Length: 397
Image (cartoon, rainbow, N blue to C red):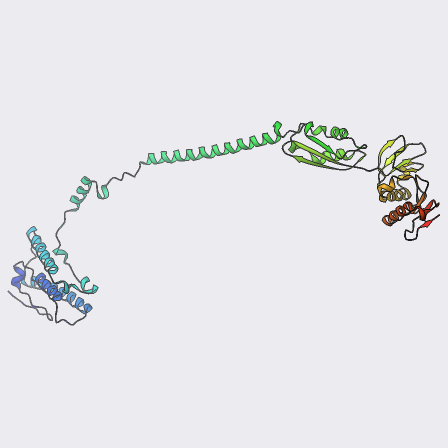
């Protein structure tokens, strides 16, 4: 029983071809592909329309074949190895025919090359799943392959524990090294003989007859044999400043173990003699530097009733201020100072001249006028009194 079905330009297939086991659909498809590759083909459709037409024709052909088998009452024959081999051979021939086509016919767009449908029934059958798995297990490939990089869990845990122990040991060693270095540095700076101050390394400067070097070193002796960092400069300054003849003290340290004490002594400006004939050497601030038994050369004498009380009066303070402002060359010529009030400071010179200073104001000008008059014998003449309480108008008597 034969029956033909027509759809568009495609040719009808017969039941005889279908029952004989041949594949007219594959031949038709091969012929169409040869016609597409042949140069000068009369087809004028675009690439996309050809792809759609070919797809529609294949689906229609498959539908017609299904209807013919169903209407003829034939059952689908089981697929045997021979039929599969025949289909594989036909597919190989079609591929060879496409490869033998002229090179000029192979210039097709991406859309034309992509439109190639394969019937799963035409594919060669592969081995069973069990056979594939067995082959992979035998050859050591696939999911059963053993990865040499995969370690046992216990080995991995042991390796991790070893790494943690190594890291901990490194940290402990670093901490021990740091602590040892700190201990060594502390020992060197605070306890080693290298930084220890001794008597030979203590230097005292600025001393005079009123402040002896030995007294200063005696006060600094409690700092001997200490680390230079442990020497208290503040305590040492306080103890040395208590010496009567010291005006100021500065301490300097030189590593590793040298100590220098700079003393600024007080300068005597007058000798205060009280009723008991006790003579006290004082500086410009009225601080008693020392006591002497006889008057010193170049230091004028101030007669008072009570030393402590008189040093606190304004008259004596003004007299000391005048003496502090007098040049050293002129001060050495003065022998005695009297001050009944703060504005009546008077001094006596070695050659018998009396100088009335008044108070301590304008002392620079007053000192210049006095020195000029004492050096000018023609102007001074036989006069013995010089009043410079008003320095711009000195009075000679």
